[in-house]
Image 1 (cartoon, helix red, strand yellow):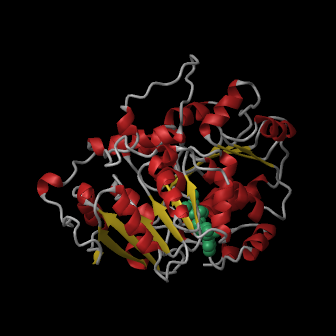
Image 2 (spheres, helix red, strand yellow):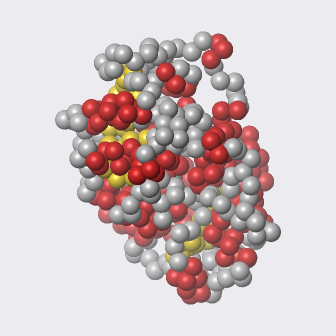
Length: 451
Ligand code: ADP
Ligand code: MG
């Protein structure tokens, strides 16, 4: 199928051709005509399937006629993270280059003043994270009564990060007569409930998970001692292989992101760090450098990386086995994209005797072992009955809360006080208690320098 068959206008088609896209992806084929008809859409498709163009392209055509009024955006796109919001803004710029649509990006970590000035002029498209949008709304800087087109993107991510109450509040401020497009990578019961609540007779579009991870990524694991020192040494050896052109290193705890990053730099590796606590401009700058190839290795946490579109990474290294097996699939999905081949290597220690078998079970195939630290304890790759984590077990909810802690540091609640977390500090750092204990050298705990 061709883009020309979807009903898009000539200018959008030109911009798409210039973006180099030959054919619409499956979700685009189904979503674009439906959105152009004015119908609600419930789209379920994994990261990397082209959802962004699936909603931005028809939106550009829909918004091409009409004018924005001051402080009353005509359409609203909600994104769970600042990076994702920025990526959607980039897509609007790219695909909308032959239109004169105005756009504002409302994300935390950037100046209110600039964002307010943009809103004052009136915008066709407002792209926002829920927290910042509500802040501005509560200060009377924005009216949502004219937003007749709403996109809720990455709904399952919103859920993981604890944003659903904010999203519900925002939706209640929008007009009832509107078109709503709702996208999620998964369809958990809570997501289904929201979809039922927000959408009116939607067209449901689901796309089979792309044959990503399993088919295009060569996956390996390597046994390793559980002391951080040993893990860092093993990581350095892996990163030194000739075929490692660009790599993402994932760690479970944001503290380790800093520690691993600094250690790599000290050993002469070309590395940068990305984690949820970094100020927005430096996160963007880091990501840009990595995208351009100015830096070869990116060390990051799951929250910082989720959904980011980072092209052509040759290797993914899991410094830790993720607590949640699904995160493994997301992590290795950073390589082997767009038909390219990729390699992932996971360091597995004695601490991972439960989490690693869960990963192997989820991906449903054996992962080859690379010769590594022969001293390290053997690691099971098959789980026994007792080891299998129960569905919806505590592990999962702990992860969600610890991610939330990373995603939303110290948000004030309505009474002005800071929200208390129910999770003990140690659990928030990540579930496992590391061998580092409290003996981390002080210099390693100093903040990552902003580049
Ligand atoms: P999702 O939102 O589903 O995670 P994105 O919209 O971010 O996925 O798209 C993933 C990548 O695919 C992006 O790099 C985007 O430029 C690219 N892409 C999107 N649509 C097409 C297409 N029709 N042909 C080729 N590449 C595409
Ligand atoms: Mg997306």
